[in-house]
Length: 223
Image (cartoon, rainbow, N blue to C red; front, top):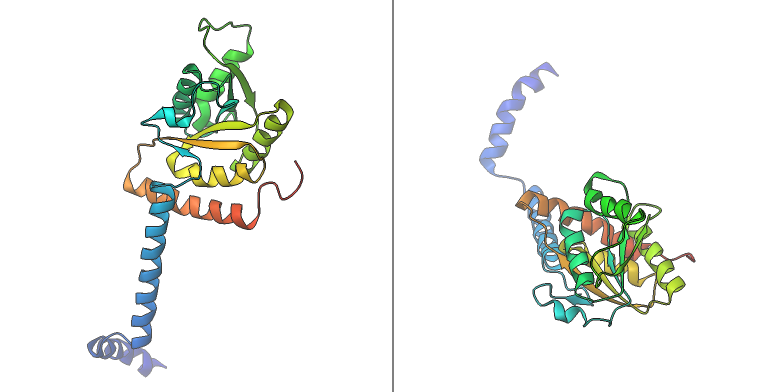
């Protein structure tokens, strides 16, 4: 055994001199190819999303004129970017109801504070503002939000919804919500300010989330 260990460095040098074994070369090439294919697919799904009801935030008229939607729904998380978009759509008269997902989590502070504010005896000084409904999803996931939104739509007879969420989250959110309601859904994107590393992290998270949405529908059981 001692002689084998002494000879090991020389054997490794000789192996490197002969080149990488073909099997290893094929394995590395395959892994790199799969990663590149995934990265290309993820970029198209989450950086350049093609959600079925996607409306161009640069041209919000595409989200439907005033009165064409029953509610503007803002999903929780990244509230600093999502909430202003939803509130502006409501102020423009896109829908008579502004529906906010409240989670009492650090990433949703702005929305949660607004819900707390509206829960008081405060009367809005904006006569054109929409009525505000806040809900607490259980569980606090996109799946939980989809089920909660579906309940609200059924209870209130909503047939058309404008749903606001971050660009990378559009496809998964639309998939989950459409699994739970027959209401027409128009997706509107808020724009995150991410580094390349943050986008990569989102690609990984959204790939797993979308796969789960397809394999285990949010409303496989009755809501």
